[in-house]
Length: 232
Image 1 (cartoon, rainbow, N blue to C red):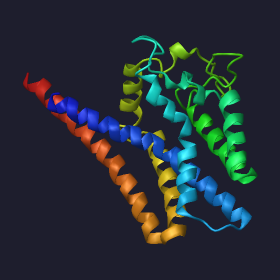
Image 2: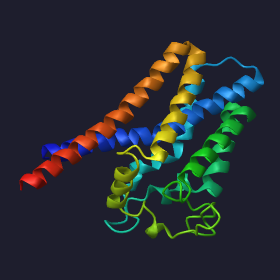
Image 3: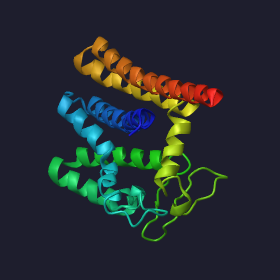
Image 4: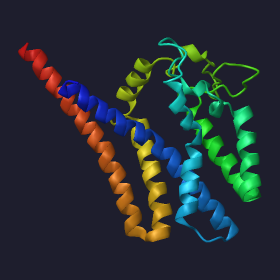
Protein backbone atom coordinates (compact mmCIF):
# COMPACT_ATOMS: atom_id res chain seq x y z
CA UNK A 1 0.00 0.00 0.00
CA UNK A 2 1.06 3.59 -0.60
CA UNK A 3 1.99 5.58 2.53
CA UNK A 4 -1.28 7.53 2.40
CA UNK A 5 -3.36 4.35 2.15
CA UNK A 6 -1.42 2.80 5.01
CA UNK A 7 -2.04 5.86 7.17
CA UNK A 8 -5.76 5.84 6.34
CA UNK A 9 -5.95 2.17 7.23
CA UNK A 10 -4.33 2.86 10.60
CA UNK A 11 -6.74 5.75 11.23
CA UNK A 12 -9.71 3.53 10.38
CA UNK A 13 -8.50 0.85 12.78
CA UNK A 14 -8.30 3.40 15.60
CA UNK A 15 -11.68 4.86 14.57
CA UNK A 16 -13.29 1.41 14.69
CA UNK A 17 -11.89 0.95 18.18
CA UNK A 18 -13.18 4.35 19.27
CA UNK A 19 -16.69 3.54 17.99
CA UNK A 20 -16.77 0.50 20.29
CA UNK A 21 -15.41 2.38 23.32
CA UNK A 22 -18.69 4.09 24.20
CA UNK A 23 -20.57 0.77 24.18
CA UNK A 24 -17.91 -0.82 26.40
CA UNK A 25 -17.88 2.19 28.75
CA UNK A 26 -21.67 2.05 29.08
CA UNK A 27 -21.48 -1.69 29.75
CA UNK A 28 -19.02 -1.11 32.58
CA UNK A 29 -21.15 1.73 33.94
CA UNK A 30 -24.26 -0.49 33.95
CA UNK A 31 -22.42 -3.11 36.00
CA UNK A 32 -21.10 -0.39 38.33
CA UNK A 33 -24.54 1.13 38.93
CA UNK A 34 -26.20 -2.26 39.38
CA UNK A 35 -23.64 -3.41 41.93
CA UNK A 36 -23.80 -0.07 43.72
CA UNK A 37 -27.57 -0.43 44.01
CA UNK A 38 -27.25 -4.02 45.25
CA UNK A 39 -24.46 -3.14 47.68
CA UNK A 40 -22.06 -5.58 46.01
CA UNK A 41 -18.28 -5.28 45.74
CA UNK A 42 -16.93 -4.15 42.38
CA UNK A 43 -14.42 -6.21 40.45
CA UNK A 44 -12.43 -5.85 37.27
CA UNK A 45 -13.80 -9.20 36.07
CA UNK A 46 -17.36 -7.91 36.27
CA UNK A 47 -16.43 -4.71 34.44
CA UNK A 48 -14.77 -6.71 31.66
CA UNK A 49 -17.89 -8.85 31.39
CA UNK A 50 -20.07 -5.73 31.19
CA UNK A 51 -17.88 -4.23 28.46
CA UNK A 52 -17.88 -7.50 26.53
CA UNK A 53 -21.64 -7.93 26.76
CA UNK A 54 -22.22 -4.37 25.55
CA UNK A 55 -20.30 -5.09 22.33
CA UNK A 56 -21.40 -8.73 22.03
CA UNK A 57 -23.67 -8.17 18.99
CA UNK A 58 -20.73 -6.79 17.02
CA UNK A 59 -18.98 -10.16 17.09
CA UNK A 60 -21.10 -10.92 14.03
CA UNK A 61 -18.80 -8.65 12.03
CA UNK A 62 -16.37 -11.59 11.97
CA UNK A 63 -18.82 -13.44 9.73
CA UNK A 64 -20.09 -10.51 7.67
CA UNK A 65 -17.09 -10.21 5.35
CA UNK A 66 -15.89 -13.77 4.68
CA UNK A 67 -19.44 -14.97 4.26
CA UNK A 68 -20.90 -11.80 2.69
CA UNK A 69 -23.57 -12.37 0.09
CA UNK A 70 -21.60 -10.48 -2.57
CA UNK A 71 -19.86 -7.18 -3.14
CA UNK A 72 -23.24 -5.56 -3.43
CA UNK A 73 -25.73 -3.87 -1.14
CA UNK A 74 -25.77 -5.69 2.17
CA UNK A 75 -22.66 -7.80 1.69
CA UNK A 76 -20.80 -6.02 4.50
CA UNK A 77 -23.88 -5.33 6.65
CA UNK A 78 -23.28 -7.34 9.80
CA UNK A 79 -26.45 -5.77 11.23
CA UNK A 80 -28.37 -8.38 9.27
CA UNK A 81 -26.79 -11.22 11.26
CA UNK A 82 -28.61 -12.91 14.15
CA UNK A 83 -26.88 -11.02 17.03
CA UNK A 84 -28.44 -7.82 15.64
CA UNK A 85 -31.99 -9.27 15.71
CA UNK A 86 -33.30 -8.01 19.09
CA UNK A 87 -36.54 -10.02 19.16
CA UNK A 88 -34.53 -13.23 18.83
CA UNK A 89 -31.10 -12.59 20.31
CA UNK A 90 -32.07 -10.53 23.36
CA UNK A 91 -34.30 -13.12 25.08
CA UNK A 92 -31.86 -15.91 24.18
CA UNK A 93 -28.93 -13.99 25.70
CA UNK A 94 -30.92 -13.04 28.82
CA UNK A 95 -32.01 -16.64 29.35
CA UNK A 96 -28.45 -17.88 28.96
CA UNK A 97 -27.22 -15.26 31.45
CA UNK A 98 -29.92 -16.30 33.92
CA UNK A 99 -28.92 -19.95 33.68
CA UNK A 100 -25.21 -19.18 34.13
CA UNK A 101 -25.13 -16.18 36.47
CA UNK A 102 -28.64 -15.81 37.88
CA UNK A 103 -31.32 -13.14 37.59
CA UNK A 104 -29.01 -10.19 38.26
CA UNK A 105 -26.86 -11.01 35.24
CA UNK A 106 -29.94 -11.57 33.12
CA UNK A 107 -30.91 -7.97 33.92
CA UNK A 108 -27.40 -6.67 33.21
CA UNK A 109 -27.28 -8.50 29.88
CA UNK A 110 -30.70 -7.16 28.91
CA UNK A 111 -29.81 -3.54 29.71
CA UNK A 112 -26.38 -3.74 28.03
CA UNK A 113 -27.83 -5.22 24.84
CA UNK A 114 -30.71 -2.75 24.78
CA UNK A 115 -28.17 0.08 24.95
CA UNK A 116 -26.18 -1.43 22.09
CA UNK A 117 -29.29 -1.82 19.96
CA UNK A 118 -30.43 1.75 20.64
CA UNK A 119 -26.96 3.03 19.73
CA UNK A 120 -27.19 1.11 16.43
CA UNK A 121 -30.72 2.29 15.60
CA UNK A 122 -31.32 4.56 12.60
CA UNK A 123 -30.54 7.46 12.38
CA UNK A 124 -28.09 7.38 15.32
CA UNK A 125 -26.41 4.22 14.01
CA UNK A 126 -26.34 2.16 10.85
CA UNK A 127 -29.80 0.78 11.41
CA UNK A 128 -31.46 -2.20 13.05
CA UNK A 129 -34.41 -4.44 12.16
CA UNK A 130 -36.12 -4.29 15.56
CA UNK A 131 -39.14 -6.26 14.35
CA UNK A 132 -37.35 -9.06 12.47
CA UNK A 133 -38.53 -11.72 11.52
CA UNK A 134 -41.79 -9.82 11.03
CA UNK A 135 -40.13 -6.91 9.23
CA UNK A 136 -36.70 -6.40 7.67
CA UNK A 137 -36.97 -2.60 7.80
CA UNK A 138 -34.45 -0.62 9.82
CA UNK A 139 -36.79 1.09 12.25
CA UNK A 140 -36.39 4.76 13.15
CA UNK A 141 -37.28 5.69 16.73
CA UNK A 142 -37.06 9.42 15.97
CA UNK A 143 -40.37 11.12 15.08
CA UNK A 144 -40.30 12.58 11.59
CA UNK A 145 -37.45 10.37 10.37
CA UNK A 146 -38.75 7.41 8.35
CA UNK A 147 -37.57 3.83 8.63
CA UNK A 148 -35.32 2.62 5.81
CA UNK A 149 -34.54 -0.56 3.91
CA UNK A 150 -31.25 -2.29 4.85
CA UNK A 151 -29.86 -1.71 1.36
CA UNK A 152 -30.39 2.05 1.81
CA UNK A 153 -28.46 2.27 5.09
CA UNK A 154 -24.83 3.24 5.61
CA UNK A 155 -24.20 -0.41 6.46
CA UNK A 156 -25.02 -1.52 2.91
CA UNK A 157 -21.57 -1.14 1.36
CA UNK A 158 -18.06 -0.73 2.80
CA UNK A 159 -17.51 2.56 0.94
CA UNK A 160 -20.58 4.07 2.64
CA UNK A 161 -19.24 3.05 6.04
CA UNK A 162 -15.84 4.57 5.22
CA UNK A 163 -17.55 7.78 4.16
CA UNK A 164 -19.54 7.91 7.41
CA UNK A 165 -16.41 7.39 9.52
CA UNK A 166 -14.55 10.07 7.57
CA UNK A 167 -17.33 12.62 8.12
CA UNK A 168 -18.18 11.76 11.74
CA UNK A 169 -15.01 10.47 13.41
CA UNK A 170 -12.03 11.89 11.54
CA UNK A 171 -13.10 15.44 12.38
CA UNK A 172 -14.31 16.91 15.71
CA UNK A 173 -18.04 16.73 15.01
CA UNK A 174 -20.61 17.31 17.74
CA UNK A 175 -21.34 13.60 17.91
CA UNK A 176 -17.70 12.59 18.12
CA UNK A 177 -16.94 15.09 20.87
CA UNK A 178 -20.13 14.24 22.82
CA UNK A 179 -19.52 10.50 22.73
CA UNK A 180 -15.88 10.93 23.69
CA UNK A 181 -16.84 13.12 26.65
CA UNK A 182 -19.43 10.55 27.77
CA UNK A 183 -17.23 7.47 27.38
CA UNK A 184 -14.17 9.06 28.99
CA UNK A 185 -16.32 10.24 31.93
CA UNK A 186 -17.83 6.77 32.41
CA UNK A 187 -14.38 5.15 32.26
CA UNK A 188 -12.99 7.66 34.77
CA UNK A 189 -15.85 6.97 37.20
CA UNK A 190 -15.74 3.18 36.93
CA UNK A 191 -11.98 2.61 36.94
CA UNK A 192 -11.46 5.49 39.35
CA UNK A 193 -13.70 3.71 41.85
CA UNK A 194 -11.73 0.49 41.37
CA UNK A 195 -8.14 1.77 41.30
CA UNK A 196 -8.27 5.39 42.37
CA UNK A 197 -9.30 8.64 40.77
CA UNK A 198 -5.96 9.35 39.07
CA UNK A 199 -5.94 5.97 37.35
CA UNK A 200 -9.46 6.63 36.12
CA UNK A 201 -8.43 10.01 34.77
CA UNK A 202 -5.35 8.45 33.13
CA UNK A 203 -7.52 6.05 31.10
CA UNK A 204 -9.79 8.95 30.09
CA UNK A 205 -6.76 10.97 28.96
CA UNK A 206 -5.54 8.03 26.85
CA UNK A 207 -8.89 7.90 25.07
CA UNK A 208 -8.77 11.62 24.33
CA UNK A 209 -5.19 11.28 23.10
CA UNK A 210 -6.28 8.61 20.60
CA UNK A 211 -9.23 10.67 19.38
CA UNK A 212 -7.19 13.86 18.99
CA UNK A 213 -4.51 11.80 17.25
CA UNK A 214 -7.12 10.63 14.72
CA UNK A 215 -8.22 14.22 14.08
CA UNK A 216 -4.65 15.48 13.68
CA UNK A 217 -3.64 12.56 11.49
CA UNK A 218 -6.55 13.09 9.11
CA UNK A 219 -6.02 16.86 9.10
CA UNK A 220 -2.37 16.31 8.17
CA UNK A 221 -3.36 14.02 5.29
CA UNK A 222 -5.89 16.54 3.98
CA UNK A 223 -3.33 19.35 4.17
CA UNK A 224 -0.75 17.27 2.32
CA UNK A 225 -3.31 16.34 -0.37
CA UNK A 226 -4.22 20.00 -0.86
CA UNK A 227 -0.55 20.94 -1.14
CA UNK A 228 0.00 18.32 -3.82
CA UNK A 229 -3.09 19.49 -5.69
CA UNK A 230 -1.80 23.08 -5.69
CA UNK A 231 1.64 22.05 -6.88
CA UNK A 232 0.10 19.80 -9.53
